[in-house]
Image (cartoon, rainbow, N blue to C red; front, side, top):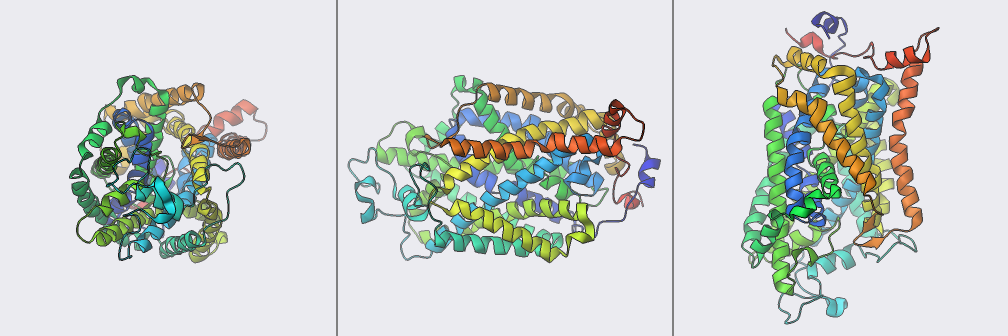
Length: 560
């Protein structure tokens, strides 16, 4: 796109903008270094063999995570609008953006449920004795407190407290999900009140809060890491975390898990980064930001993994289990078992460290969910303008709807549903939509043209590493992982328990709803771009070209 055309297609400057570059940097850190690292990474690594998962994760981070992060930040900053407007560069693939918004909507519901669990633990941390530090009589002989002579086959107090006292978890959901816990529902309501409140205040408010949201978690993580590595048997767990089982590296499901974890960890391919970057100054050079954010993100994941597996090594030593992978059943609640287990072993004021940890986890949840909510609200404002109503009504409506949907996770069978929604509604569709995103930018719009836009915007040349990744390596690897996964896919389970058939039907409908956005928006684009007398082929070709509205929204500031 030439500079002349860019200047012709200028639009008014967005009403909201980051106060300064640091607000953007710390907001991206709080978005990317969030629950995806501290909550999701350890249990995904545990499910996929520890060290077997770390190698694919680091490879995927370099050839998918970092290139896509750079692409999305550049695209959002150049366009200056939400994710739907960003896909004006290839209208035929606008369904990718719509699908990403739906996946973001699904993600924010269960992220808020994790915040509710966190808040429940935070309240329990103010007890005179941490309730998960010792066995309860009601647990019978299923519990070991580290002092039992024969602990084989028994569970730790932290695991039993989480599963029986917090979740009241069912062995299966064949007979329904059960009634929601009123305590968890109350915690969920508080979580959504805070999310809604931050969203009502807007970008400038969340930008100021990002200084705290981005730094505080690292302080707590380092304290927990120091404690975890000093536990007896901890190094056995950490070795398991880093030592790969080489044959498992050929398992496509491990690579699939690595790709989807990078999506969650960096918050790429969900539209949130494009939204955040749209509030940037048009000429900001984001290259250094990207290196800083992706490096901090991967370090956070590794630190979280070391803490979790160090604690699992300690549990294995206590129970006499030689296989670290068999210590606990895993699942999305692993972080609510391993971290509290470590905190309970602090010799001095463990309550204080428990409060700090769960406050940190809650803060991380705010950073992640506010980013997701901002993405959804920006799309609505872009599409409907003033007809969408005032910001407070939009944010309040989103919070109310999110709260109502998230109650399902507060039931005894809620973790089954979380796992189901995560797989069908988010992870599986995110991979397909990510491939579509790369095709839209690199092939329909063109790498050369996109790099010219970056040079016009930031004044820097794009290296061959980025060009090759965007055009060939990144979409090629993602396509290969997707195909292998489809061929080798088995029925989804939760902790080894099979789902009823109805649950799979619901999951398939969830995935189909997201993926049907692709043909739906493509047909709409062809209909809108096809002129009277044009053939279907001519309409199709027109839909593959950038829309007339494509261009930077705030280019008037570009080179003043």
